[in-house]
Length: 60
Ligand SMILES: [Zn+2]
Image (cartoon, rainbow, N blue to C red; front, side, top):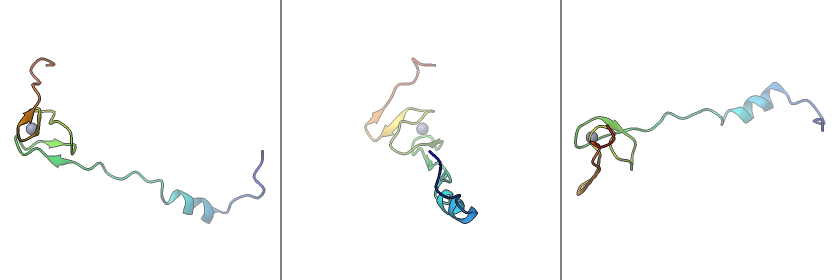
């Protein structure tokens, strides 16, 4: 199937104006201060929230 009519540069650019990637949001770990993704365990110390932290010693 062929497009009925070629899109203008403006129409293509308008469509792609929403395609840009947004920067990844990072939060700092309150336990060790390193950067981590929100709602995830810290890669450095395994901290998740008060009262819950993962033991990372086995995987290293
Ligand atoms: Zn941490």
